Image (cartoon, rainbow, N blue to C red; front, side, top):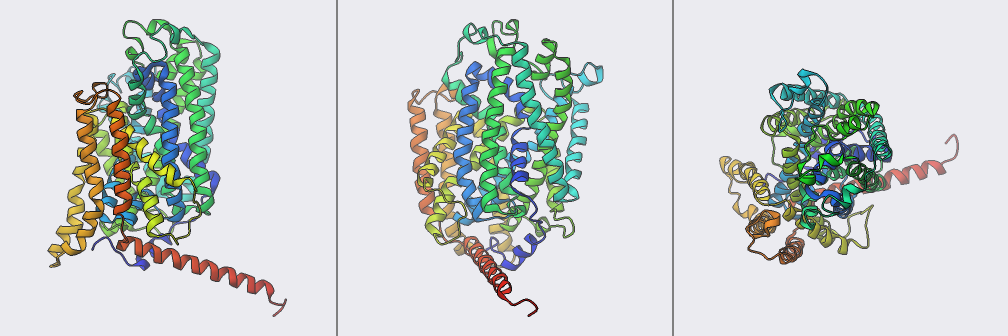
Length: 566
């Protein structure tokens, strides 16, 4: 099967990575990924969908991200490899489920890079210059805007081209700035104008019902924002002490971001002038640069200038991080056996997978050409992200059954409860994404299958081999994921009208059905996992690494006992 590689090949490629990232650098990476363009646009977009109840949407989003992140933290600490998020499904279920999970994850992450560049240019369009206004037409970037965003993509690319140490130093400094500015923005807007009547007299706390709160979680950029928690996991091969630093970085980044995002949402809701909430209410909001426009409205010109500057710093910092992490994901997909060998090469001098960086740059240009607005990209990214989430809860418990003796630096006693809850949360958010968006993104998942079919069927046949006997267990183990996507698409289509469906399922019962589906497929997925070649290989690598560490420790202890001058 193409999904197996010699341990020496993989270990050789990974030896070129530099284990130079500590807890602070990894936390900065997670927080820097979460606080990108989402904080510049998310408050307005969430308010337009859910009104003041957008505050609850951010809290729900953090809870979803946290439960799912806990499952991935155990996996990331177990398998400290580059591009970790694209590997876990391969280890637990083989090539089909592993490929689908990797494809969904990569689509979700690589499309963030042009999204961040788009956000910067969209904010620039509010500058008081004619050429700036010509960058954005109110719905999407113009040709000039796309050109400027393309320059930013190249900038992200070159910051990652030279060395991981340069990335770490640059990112930590940028992240400090990215945290300070949102906190300052929320504080300044609250002090300048805090109108509680925006809640009392504009349709109340939930002007569009609770279904709008759930939809806001899925499509307003909230899932997009919190998805940054996985960036430290994708850099696991470069973590100095992954067992301790990865879970700390993941959990800390989500909690810090939650506090910042809730403060920004409250500040935005209270700072919107009452005359902007006319007949259409919150749904009528249409700012090009939401927070900067509010700062100008209330005479905070210094804040507006700071926000215009940060509109480059925050998205650029996040774009830079995702350019780094997606290149490691490509490396992981290649080592899973589903890309040409060139994308597994890591530059020995810099520790950077340069061919993977080039591929991601090309794909980022493609996304920028097709999806020119931040909102359209946010929707695609959010739903694809949720699809990629479902592998973690299943894989973590499946691997506890298949490989109970593997070293687990992070092992939560409550994981048997957390994992199914995470699966249910992921299924609900996917449903809340609304039809037909859910169907479109599930279709995008199918677009990647020909690549899988070539490496698993076409290539072996072209070499005169018959892959069917080897492929059958991979198909059986991955069937749950294919069936899950088809069933969720059908439920989304037939679901409540408040979630874009045909209304065949009664309100409330549709959510209950999604919960049952999530649990059913969770248990199917856990039971269908098997000891596939990728798992056997990685077990051998990890056992060898453990033995080497024990031998090194014994050698150091023996050396300490030796007489001086011996």
